[in-house]
Image 1 (tube, rainbow, N blue to C red):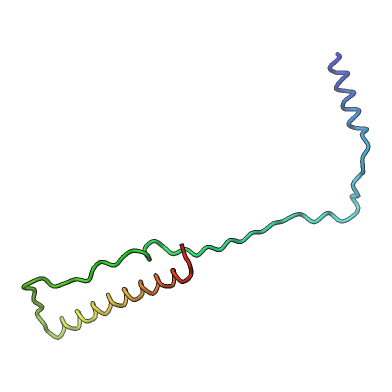
Image 2 (image 1 turned 180 degrees about the horizontal axis):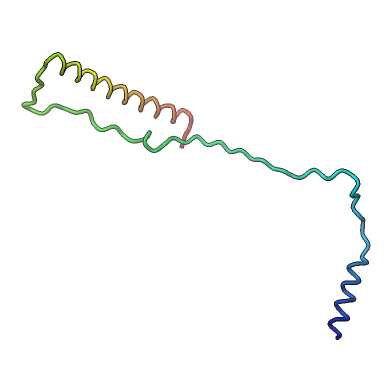
Length: 100
């Protein structure tokens, strides 16, 4: 019974506490919104992979040449050199951009 009387007195005191009443007719306060943008330059790990050493023909190695085989071999070498150039250019661009 005492607990009930104490809680009634507390509730009654909270309900009658006076304080400034908010102006509900006025404009609502602006909400606080914080936006952060972080930019990080990142290159994929494959960019930093080392190229294998250039192949070297061993002793006794021999290439047999014909026109079609020569065209194929020239195209294969040009393709590999283009890939190496692209990889080295990408490595340089990543380094220049300060990428991680």
